Each structure stands twice: as structure tokens, then as C-alpha cells.
Image (cartoon, rainbow, N blue to C red; front, side):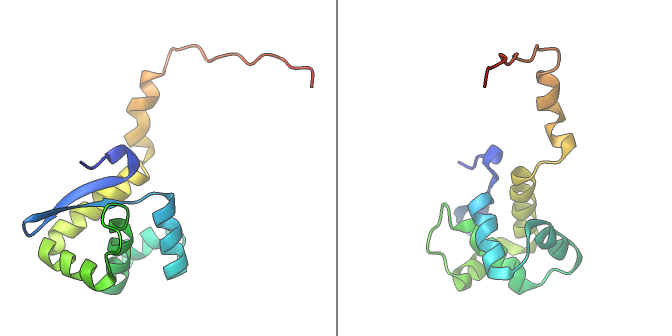
Length: 124
């Protein structure tokens, strides 16, 4: 089962279920492969998506739960899932990996009103 708190999102492609994971290791692999940092990567897929870049991102996201998935296999999975399916899965996984402030406000509010632990003054 996909854990959205860890940047995971499950999706169906044909009769199979796959899980995308976008964590630090995935983003490092993508940076090595594409030369793009996380912000640049997100901007590129929002502004000028290419199938080659989408397939690279998708393939990297599959590696945690589906190791050794090749780029060609990732492309086949994407074809089976359809554009709407891959767009939804990528969006869910990327949002889970990098929640916006509004996504985390609920967690911040649950801690509101609680006293913060005091640090003891040290001598050195």
C-alpha cells in the first residue's frame, strides 16, 4: 500500500497496480540523469513537458517498489495507465513528497497551544 506521507502514490496500469515514490534518493537520481534540480524539474514538467522527461521521472519513481524497471518498461506502464492516469499519479506522488504550506497547516494547528520543550542551559 502506498504511503502518501513518504511521497508515494499507487496507480493502476492495465490489471496491475504500481507505486511511485519520490524521496531524496529518487530526486538525486533524477538530478544525476537530467541535470535538473527539483525546482527546475517541476517547472519543466509544468511548463514544457516532454515524453522523454516524463518517462525518466516515471521510471525513477518506480524504482523503490519496482526495482530494475527499465525506461522502456516504464514507457509501457505509462501507455497502459494512460495520460490521465500517469498525470494523476505523478501529481499525487510529487505533492506528497513536497507538501505545500497549506497541505501542512493541519499538522501545524494540531501542535498549536502546546508548550515547546525548554532547552537546558549548558556550560559548554
